[in-house]
Image (cartoon, rainbow, N blue to C red; front, top):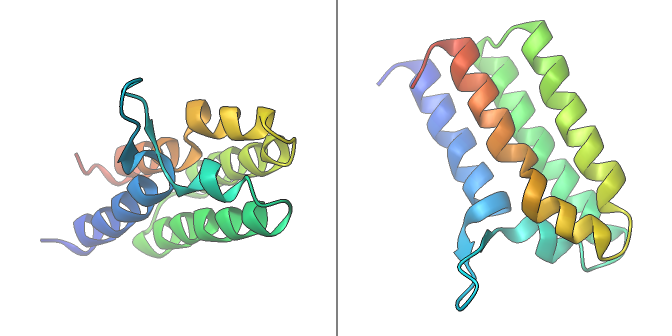
Length: 113
């Protein structure tokens, strides 16, 4: 496994944990810790944002282009900003899935599928 593939595997693990690691029974929607942490005012959103930035840092270390890193940072910033709105922000986290988006961006940039 190449260094880029190893980095992508780490990013995917974090993205799954934050965005889609848990399937809600009955409704069948996948969620992660991001919207759950968002239920804790301020601290939860800050923690989720910090962990999301770890995905961006991993992408930077793997050699993702500056343009893609900026897009990734914008995804995290939007997720963090909207995530601060009570309840609406949590619903947005479930739908937006910034970390899953960022992993897709990194994989495309690195040529890893």
